[in-house]
Image (cartoon, rainbow, N blue to C red; front, side, top):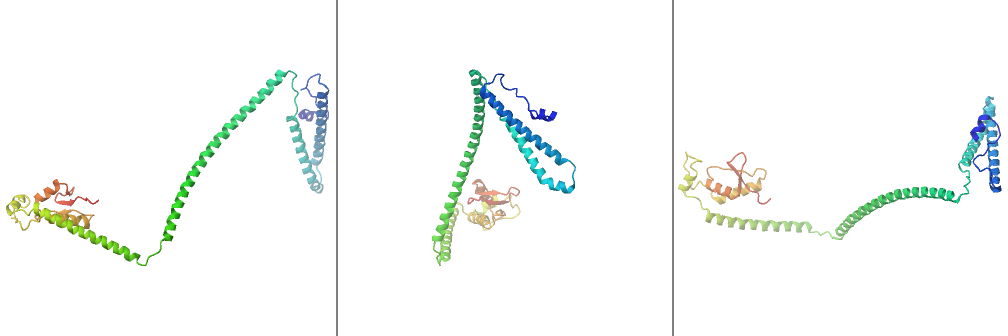
Length: 289
């Protein structure tokens, strides 16, 4: 309606063609009220446009500076009136047909459309709610874990605060360590004595002839006596010393003093291991590790 009037520049209001030909008195009154409101609004718009055209005419600089506040006010009025016209167009009341079935069908369709929109909104809100609930559960679990850690640390701090520092604490610790060392030394001496007795009884120093025959391949040009051959307990002691004192290089070099039969016995019993690159070096299997 507004575009047709702006095109021809006339002030005549447009005709309303969306109503029935024979409206009743109430409908006619509504149409008249709507026409009057449209005509009044259109008159205000035309007046505002006329004032705007007058303000846009070339004037002196001083007069234009004086009209700037008025121009801004008129522009705001124009925007407000255009907005009112647009709202009036969008919110214009439509007459419903007299057929009740058509009215019911139209209302039912509109209702179904709104129900569908509400269902989509509900599904979206439900998904968002589930995500929020999952996040809340995770945060609660994390909070419980932090609370448990806090409680443990609090208990430890309270226990440390409750302990009274003893003056002879260092002496008590040193005494305890000394007792343990003495017990370990006594145990070591007992074990070494038992091992020496067992080895001396079951693995005595070989006779001269046995040692000569066994080491014939090792030293073919030199005669070896039983006094030069090391007892098995000395070999074991040397292996244990190397294993404990130099764990980075626990291998022991074999020479003419080590009887090959003893070495072979230790290898067969998986007590010692040979060096992967030198079979003349052996080490004790680290049973303590």
